[in-house]
Each structure stands twice: as structure tokens, then as C-alpha cells.
Image (cartoon, rainbow over all chains, first blue to last red):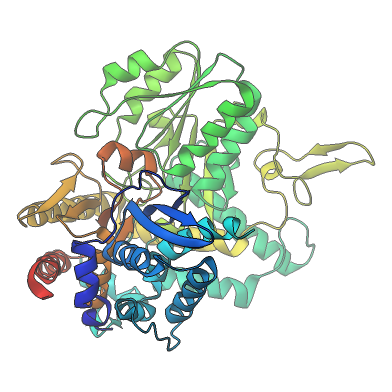
Length: 141
Length: 408
């Protein structure tokens, strides 16, 4: 296990300079999720119009992995339809299981692939994506 | 105390983790096991195993003797007046839930009070929340001083004649504080309440005398004191145990069973429904033998010395905050490194072979009181050395550098 596999520069950049951190004033969807085993928590706000995520912001407390993952996720889902956003979440799950997954222009996310070698930290990385799924799935109907 | 000789008896310590010799600093979560405990469990299965309290055959007798022998050891270890006052449980959580469900739910009425503290582990907090909800009793907290300790004057004002139960941990698993149990017990008794003590963190480190403390219930786990997982014990005052109903029903705990009515065995068997944790009890007995051979006074002194040493060494690291009182600390140091989340600290330390705990330590209300979401904790036991604490300190300095400047 090499630390540099886990703490890639792009991850630390998202951790120290999180994108989309804060609250939306006119959110359509608001989700709170926590990780009861460690105390990490995220509050995710989405603005949705006609089945498309038009904006996303988050607040929360957690480690570098959970907060950088949230930062990347909120960047990734803007402008995506619900199906596209959920598909991204599925691909992220696959990435965490050690599968080779490409995120095309969202290459920052691939930096989290090293988390797979640190099993105790996978749930840190998936927290924000689980919040996304929890927020979108009820909206699909 | 010859630490090297003690370390030799713990097979698990002699391995490398991620290319480094293991430094195990997570004994407050679960201690490691000496060979004598592992052998006792194996010998029991290889030579003596059968079900207890029923077999007429020889193995049944040997298994029963081993199980009841362990009960006698536990009773002697905490100076209980008789072995019958020891109920074997799965651990501290089950023991505290037994008191809450069997004793407190029967005794508490609307308007009564249950008193605990904000430093309790969830296992000594949620059972009381549930009793309060079920009975209409009020759950009250003795507030903490700025350093996390309890002021007896606060205890005097929170505990009233309406209080039926006071429950408190002897040693905090986060702050390392030792609570003034004897003085609190005196206040509880003066108000007509019973005193329940969570001994999960105290039993591994301190000489426990339940009669001298004058407490009514005492709960602890085997796995934090060199014993196996899945075994613990509840000590109870005999007249209280005798008036308590079982909460689990089935084999092993009954006297007569009719079609529509049954009667129970005597204490403690009525609380041990089903085939008991025989091998676990045997292992716990062996753990008690192991600890007593070293001597509880020597263990207390060694572990306190390590905690005070760690507190001194770690507090010299710039940007490191230690939680809890400065001096007196029992066996652990809880801390945070500025700008580095405790999970990240624990991961970096793990790559250097150092095992610590990171998270809320099953103390979410205490984390809120400390105004943090999580902390890191290094905890010590008989097999730890000051050299390991120096390695921890070096690794923490490297962690700080790694997160501060290492990634560009």
C-alpha cells in the first residue's frame, strides 16, 4: 500500500479547495446522509428541471476522501439527466470494486481508483454518491 | 514488569503490517490475546467440550466444571460476594441491556428519573433512552466540566429522590477520565437510586472491588482484557437479581415447564437461556489467570505510565490537540491533528504498521460536546512500550508533513 496511490494530488486539491461547497437557495432536492460507523456526514442539494440536474452543492464534515469525492461528484452531475447521473454513480461503484472504469472528461474521478486498495476507506468515497442516488431515485417517477 | 517477556506471549504482535512491525495501539477497542488464553480455548474444545448442566456423562461434568470454574474466577476477580452474582453475557452491551430491560423497565414509572452522563458509550446511553421512552421516566445528564470531568456538586443537584437509576462509565473510552464512582454511588444510594457501572474500560486496567465501591450492577467484556470476544459478565446485588425477570426464554433457564406456565431456575441461570458461551467463559477465566499473574497493580501502573508518556510526547507536536484532562488518564490518548481528518491520520499510520482508532468511538453525544465530528485515539495495554509511542509520535509528524507539504 502506497500512500501516494490514495492521496493523489487531484484528490488533495478537491479536499483543500472543494468545488460547489455551500447551499443552494432554491434547491429542489435536499438529502442528508451520514456514515454511522465513522461520523462523516454530507448534506447534498440539487436543483432539478425536467429530469436534469441543473445545479448541485454540498456541505458536510469528513475526511479527505469523502469530501473530495463529494466535490468531484457535484461537478460531475451538473447538466446530467437522472439516468446519466445514476449511471455515473453505478460506474463509481464499479471503480470502488477495483474494476477498470473510464470517466472520459471527468478524469478527476479516476484519481479515486486508489481507494480500492484501502478497503476501510471505500465507504468514505461512496458517501456522496449514495446521497446522490438517494436524492434522484424518488424523482425519477 | 518484563515487557519483552509479556510481548513474547502474544503471537499476533510478532508480524509485519504493510512492511513494518505491528504497533498495536487499539486495545481500548479490543485487546490482543496471550497464548495461554488461545490454548485454554483450544484445550477446552480438544479435551473437555460437551453441553453444560445436563450431561450425565464425564465430558458434560468437565465442561460444567470449566464453565462454573470460570464464574468463580470472575467473582473473585472483582470481589463479588458469590459466584451466583455473576451472569455471563455476550459482553458489556448485553449486560447493560439486561439491567435496563429487566430491572429498570419494571422499576421506572412516569416522573421517575434515570441519570447518566454525556461521556457514555452508546451502549450505556441508548438502553436508558429506550427505558425512558417505554416508561415515561426522564433521562437526565450530569453535565461535564470544561476538561470533561464530573463535579460532585453537579451530581448532587442532578440526582434527586425521584432518581431510580444512576448509570456511569468507570473510565471514559474517549477522555481516559476515571469517574469518582464511589462518591457518586453514595449520592445515588442516599437518594434511593441504584448505581450501575459500565466497566468495559476499567476492568482491563484496574483492580475492581464491587463491594468496596458499593455498586449495584457492574458490566464488562472479556475481549478488552485479553479474553475472547463474545463473553462478558454482569455482576449484580443478589436481592436485585432475585427480583428480576429473565428477558430471554428457552432451554437452560427453566425450572418446571407446564403447557401454559413455567418457572425459572435460580440466579444466575435464569438469565442464561440457551447453551451458554462455554468456551468464551473458559477463555475469560484464562485471561483472568494471566492478568492476575502479572498483577493488576502492575498493569495499572504500566498502562497509566504509557498514557501519561504519550500525552507528554504527543502534546509537543505542533498542531496536535489532546482531549480530556491533562494528568490522570487511564490507558489512552484521544487527539486530533490540525487540518488532517482522523481517518486520514489512521490510514497514514496504518501504512507504517501502526493501528489506532479513528471515528466517534460510539460516543456521538460526547463528540458534539467536544465540538468535533471525529477524533483519533491511541490506547495502550500491558504489551505496549514507550518505544512504540515514540514511533507513533514520529509517524504523526510525518503525517502532518505529508498533508501539509507532501502533495504538490
